[in-house]
Amino acid sequence: MSFEAWTIFALFWVVFVTTPGPNAVNCITNGMHLSFPRAMVGVLAILTQASLFLLLSALGITALIAASPTGFFVAKLVGAGFLIYLGVRGWILAKRPVIVGDRPAKSVYLHALAIATINPKSVAGYLAAFSQFVQPDVPIWSQMGVIMPTALVITAISYTGFTLLGAGLGRAALGAVFNVWVRRIMAACFVIYGVLLGTSATPGRV
Image (cartoon, rainbow, N blue to C red; front, side, top):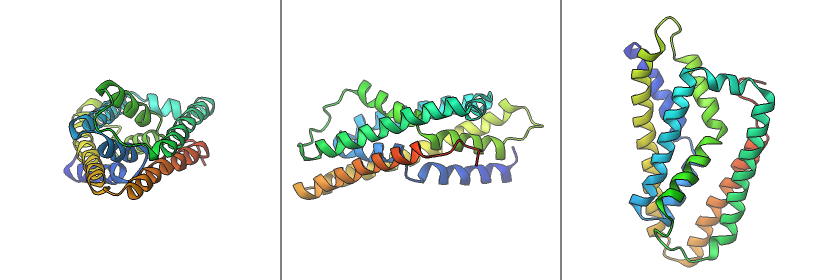
């Protein structure tokens, strides 16, 4: 991969992972509700998903998934229902006092991994990256040696930033009313993303 191609890919990935979505909302929520080290377990889960999707994309599996209307439709409905459930639950629990660091690391990890995996933005983004930036005349694994470290470092920086933002909001939310409404806004975002997911089209299709 040439330096010019790498620069274009890196800029694409910055936009891809800094555009707010379910992962960003979850990182902000974790930062608000958990101690920072515990909240960073969620970022680790996102990096796990990113590594898996990058490898699957290199093998062409995500393209096959996106090409299956039935499989994508089922996954889309499951993901939409999960996000809407998280939003409704978060809205209902918004008035309850927040207990920092009460969730075990395993729960934080699996929760974040589930959100990252069912996110349609992930499938679309990885397909876009591999259709636009991978050179077919160059061995794929030599390109992955550049693509994967670049993508994972940018992803880690972005979602660490969202987690820090959540930690800052948590410290700023000293008033009970403000805290409740911040939490409800985060909950509403999950519902909105769930609805958008449920009505989205298959990546690459009109």
